[in-house]
Length: 337
Image (cartoon, rainbow, N blue to C red; front, side, top):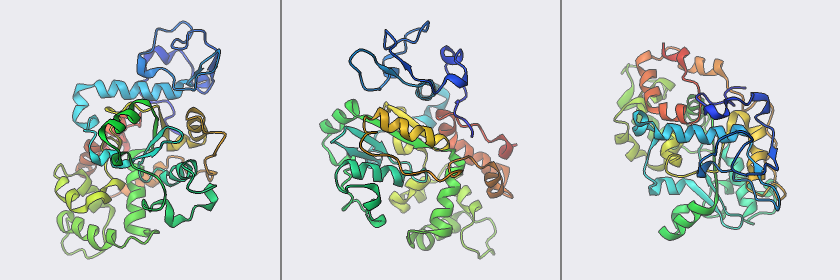
């Protein structure tokens, strides 16, 4: 298991050992304060539901994640990699559950299908997760999940201010491998345009060896993503790029104050915590996670990047550095040096 403890955690929290991170600190007299600690700023205040005589205080690991994001967002040197406009592209990624006041930002290739199912059930479109047909989950005409972009500006602002907001991340390079496999290699959802339109566009512009006739290789994909001028192709590919653009571009974590950030690697702990914090744990549970599926696989990452030039990998890291830093993922020095 990697990285439940993001690098650069706030020093105020350093005193707590990792063992205590998941403990709930309940019935603390001053809700904003931990015993002997200085005040956390406003946006770090726990989002736990208020109980009559005591507040639930977030386990430290979740507070540390939000604190890390706030610190990285303030880092001038990373501004271009951490900030983005809350554009229609971002608002299109955010699904709304008005009934329970929840916003979920979709980060494809991080187990999002399951969260969408949770929201579909909460919105009342289907009585249980098991009863949702697979083809309905991603069909936005049928799944009963409105996007935040479908509301007026005032309605959008109101929801962004008051709703419970979350999204899930995983190691950025592992996510790219997953996207490559899912869209260009196996393509289980039968989306032929990835292989027949997007792949040839990438190969034409980025393949080094012109005599090589194989289908798209991971190296071609890495060169496209690491190219500072990738936007030129992105515009042609349209919304399909959601599977590989950065978390920053998808969810605007420096502009939108999220309540909880879940990590794919610790989903067994994070999923129940998110449901509890959102106040819906009594209504729905996250589908069972097959053992081992969320663990970071360094061997797989090494295998995929084998033979790709250091220059290309460094350019890829330069583009995704904001994601690595914001969410406490270790810089993959084993690939870069």
